[in-house]
Image: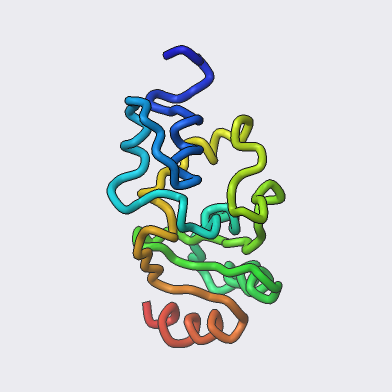
Amino acid sequence: MENENLMEGECPECEKHLMENYECGKETTSRSMFPAGKDCSSCNGACCRYVIVEIDKPEKLEDFEEIKWYVSHKNINVFVDEEDDWDIEFITPCEFLGENNLCQIYEKRPKICREFSVNDCPHHNEYIEKHTFTNLEELENFIKNVWKKI
């Protein structure tokens, strides 16, 4: 590879062209980052509008106190994913997401952004959460009707 800072198959020029819905013409494996019908040209920057962090799975009733506190805040959700992992989601856009829904620091974006695949993108995939808690009432109903029965 010409640039040692790039990951295998990564070509920022091609990705940026694909994001802007242009034809690149360069032969590169970066096209595999955009499977058929999956590119960023029609997206609203969905992957740049939240932060998700895995949290400990509650094992006893008192473990829910922190989760209650989380979901009592605006723009914060907690969910259980398909693999039974518990995650907290902060719904907040990246400060570098431009009005055109493109990254304004694309060439020096963080590693986690460079490694993110459209195969994981919420814009292109049906993602099913087992349980989602956007407020205190939803969490308390889960504790009462689901968790206590487990």
